[in-house]
Image 1: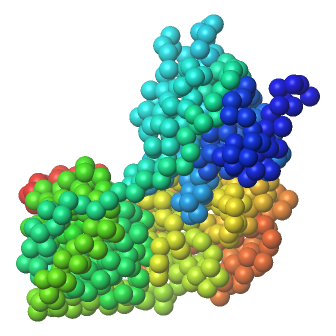
Image 2: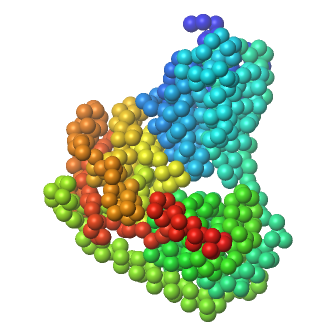
Length: 626
């Protein structure tokens, strides 16, 4: 063992005894200044910020970082998860932070691996989840083109790429490490718009020695909390709420912490609430004011509420195109009150009274203001709630008609199989009874899923609709093993999404995942096939001619339990029970229906600015002028 490795082991042992860097310094177990490599200082800095999980793929661009992680993991200071695909690693780290709040870092080599992790970071960027990305990068000596760098005679091309996705820093100068860590912390722990941060580590800088490095330079945890809005803005907002009889609240991901205040507000005003898929459970689905999701793949009641309201109270939402039907969702809204900590998001719509601040604090202030004014729902507001409630009953009947016919004959399978609404409803009910977290993959499974899902609180269902990244859900199962308190999870995925990241079968066993892949197989990208038929009357190049035996595939990996899902709800429940009893990863294969029978899906009730719909949608949007 080299002298350097011995010193690193001694430092790691001291940290393990003390419990943290701050305690080790305070107790004299570590000197205030040390000689170490850039890689070790980086790991120490991330540990001080609470990063304990590292996931990725090592390569020639990250060997020095890998050596430091080997030593620190051996002392129990962090855990390292070596996987088989960098996009999978990015998804797993995103899921860990999203579900548990625990920080994680993705590591890759130089070049292709970094590009794959960068692609996967789109989910964290879109959904506002803070994740560290550590990429090997070209050397700073410019001795010649580095293998796997972008082959152009320019510097810092990966820095330019990563900067387009989020915050980024190229550690060209070792002495700038503390600044890089502080910049990263401001992104991954941002109070209302977190995201991925990319720290590019030149291969020759990682092992560079930092002489007499002051450990106090490393930034510690620094939680930020946005405050309430400017009190002067509340009065016109209260006037608007009091003067409107038909109010719709649109709750996005930024509203998840404001559930209690939103329940009070809808009761005080007679408003109804529509939520984005990511905000499921912000108020219980069974609450009379909850109309479910709305938008281009909304619900009968959610879209009715959006299209008939006269005032929109937007809370913590970015107004993504599918969420507001490409800006045509609010046909009759004359006034918008927008609550958002991000000024740009707060000013998205015209005719807006912006309330810039923390969603919970602002909504609570609105409730106090309405109470002080003695405001109660007007007769018009009560009639509005009743009209929306009737539409909610219509939506429930619409769903029940599909649940009552859970099986349809499918020509591909040559027999009756479960429909996606029936299968997803069965799986979600099963998971709720057992406290199992549910991840939804992109596509038709996701769209039917957020229409079917009913939640009492946030954190039951995780729907990655920000990027709709195929393969996210199955990769997210790795978070069950990465968490400091492991949890059980169910990934609901289609055959198309699963084959984007199938290496989870191997990595799930290697990392100790406890979870289930529920693979709904219709041998096609059903969401796109359906879109093509709706727009052009025919589907093209979105279905698969190659039959795959997914059970044999899963069974080829020792430790994975393959389970046939059956053809009816009770058979599916038995299959899920069998999979759940397995002390590892299981795959349940379920053939599902696809076709033109309206009972086979939940349909769409909104508009979208794509394909043959563009001209009409844009004309409507500009006619509304919101």
